[in-house]
Image (cartoon, rainbow, N blue to C red; front, side, top):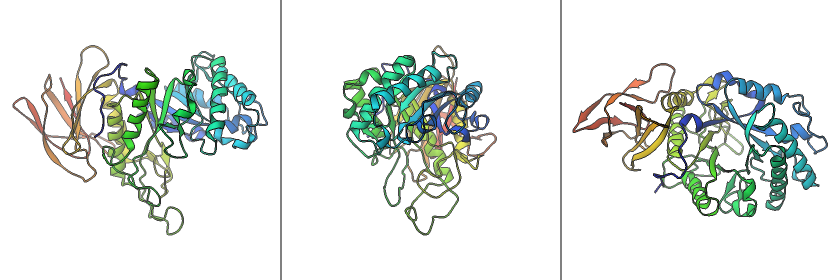
Length: 420
């Protein structure tokens, strides 16, 4: 059964401070994605700053390949985005990290001084030391993390530090076991989790719906929460990668992904929104979607965008509607969380009084429709609408009040009910 936090030691964030998306440098179009998120996570290749073989020193704001971080991050900041960077130490092969104490410390110190919130530019509020450094041994990664973290602290102690993707125990080569970082907790401000809703792995890589109790999708996050509560109370947890693929192209006839199974555009839209919702009910402070744009490729992680060729997909409209509806509200409580019936969440003002919203849906992957009586809440409903998948007004959902309860039909697509 999915574990839901009903009591929190730390106040829940407004959804505007929870909903994030992943980006990649010059490919990102800030004006296009403003409706879906104000939090962005950028893949920042360390090799751009230091050369492919650690042969250069950083000359911020310019990279070795001619990109101006000042112009790039400055444009995003001016557009109202708050940015964290995943500093991809793995963009430089492990064999070139030959003097880690010097190499990692000096880069970390220079990075924090230039990009951190105490400096002139204030471009970044957080940095990850690595994304998924699969080819780094845990010993090497620990050394890079420790020394770069020391440099970051020296450069700007206000810049939040995250490790690469971590796990409790070694789940796969793309994450590091938290035990390998034991003793370095003082350098970790936020725990960093990647999770994907795989029902099957190679060769299909089939993904299931987010509430599926048979997959590790949410359980992987809960494992980190449980570890944090015991070993590092008070530290934040961010899910920095999750997502679903959807493409219009047929599978390739040969190669590693000929048996790959993606989701439909409609499934991608509803599963992304429901993922944000169920994660908001957990003791998680942020969730960043992978990915912002795709080129419609039928393979793993290659069709995960909210846009396709920079044109909005159904998921773009669904996420934009969720943010517009819930952005200034925070998760309050789960009124119902039944995997066989319905999920009903209540969202309300961050502080003080104001309108509340209920979000309700049928939590399966079967296209199930269910007639539901929602639990009683204070106030009265004034409108209900279903998550849209296209531009324009959302579909109104009819309802009636029976004995003080809201009676309506729920589908796989979340329904939003405004309460006054």
